Amino acid sequence: MSEVRPVVVPFRGLRPAPSATRPRDERPGIGGVTPGELGAWFTERGEPAYRTRQVLDAAWRGREVAFAEILTLPAALRTDLDAAFRFDTVVESEVRITDGGLTEKALHRLSDGLLVESVLMHYPARDGSRERHTLCISSQAGCAVGCPFCATGELGMERDLETAEITDQVRSAARRLAADGRHLTNVVFMGMGEPLLNLDRVLEAIAALNDRQRFGLGARHITVSTSGVVPGIRRLTGLGPQFTLAISLHAARNPLRDVLVPLNRRWPVEEVVAAAREHGQATGRRVTYEVVMIEGINDTDLDADALAVLLHGEHAHVNLIPMNQVAHTPWTGTPIPAVERFATRLHAAGIQTTIRFNRGTEIGAACGQLAAEHAGQPTPIVVRRRRERLVSESAAALRGERSHEPVPAGVGEG
Ligand code: SAH
Ligand code: SF4
Image 1 (tube, helix red, strand yellow):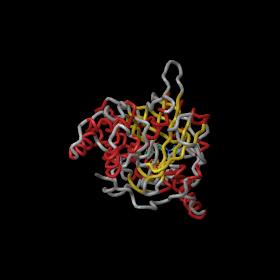
Image 2 (cartoon, protein in one colour):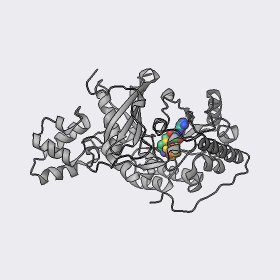
Image 3 (cartoon, helix red, strand yellow):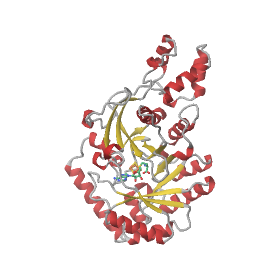
Image 4 (cartoon, protein in one colour):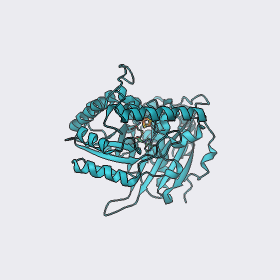
């Protein structure tokens, strides 16, 4: 085992940090600095241009974990770099391994004490396809959207991640893989947070991952998942093909989607699908729709048929994901046979559909679940009230008694 592989320690080791507990380290993380910015910094100091290459190679491809370890640089320069930049914005990480070694969940502590998660999933080579190593990363600490089946939604919003705080999750996983001679093949923004509500930073992070001078991961190997921030989708469309877009749909009927994805009251499902369609047409990329399957809530024949009507004729692919159990919800995931039935119904209507089995359920690898555990549990009365509200709202939506409730413009615009 190589020295750079982190020690696997019990996850309970990182103590609760529900909100920022320290002032943030203001030095920019090197994982968010562009070659141009770094080049200008060296030029100002009268240093040769090749210093940029040396630092970027160490930061993005090397095994170094601090500027002090870049031995090709003069000692004084290493000290100056450390005063100006952070080599890593992740202060400490804990890694938990499950699924017989196929899933590694990492909890990262940031400089102000906040915790974010990333999940590394290994897919062995099969039927002629090469092995894949996919990393699921976070774009925000917490999330303001508040989907009731999601552990991150339960946490509420803490703050946007900086560009380097996003890319450093990738650098951390890449170092772990490199220790065993393996490479990261895919990155998905399906961890904590709504990437399209932190879009500038997310785009900078993707540019860094894409950049051959830095990580060099092809755009086709990057997926951004959104709960349906329509102005953000349109902005992406204007930028041309950048990556694969995944839409967290969860329900085709507005009154139910209002409950499951509260942002739906601002941008209803038809607007989301229209924006996704334009994205698909402009970029030539197939859009993926995600549906987290919740027993008795969004998994009925009626839901399958509504989804088939909504996506009829779309260049789309549907992913059905049985819900991971989250402490505060009154619901359970749809059992596999019922998920299969739903898939068969979509297939029959001409909609390409796959079932995605959850990874790492025993370590709570659903979106934000571990950070939520560490934030401490809400009081039983809060949980009971929330459950009661969700049961009554979803029941009303299912009986058709709940109308779609649009909210005024302004939320998440810009
Ligand atoms: N905010 C973005 C991206 C992060 S969530 C979005 O919502 O798309 C990434 C995915 O994890 C989403 O599809 C979300 O629905 C899913 N997810 C959240 N909670 C889950 C749970 N309890 N079980 C299974 N999937 C879940
Ligand atoms: Fe936020 Fe996505 Fe979780 Fe909804 S599912 S609360 S948008 S992270």
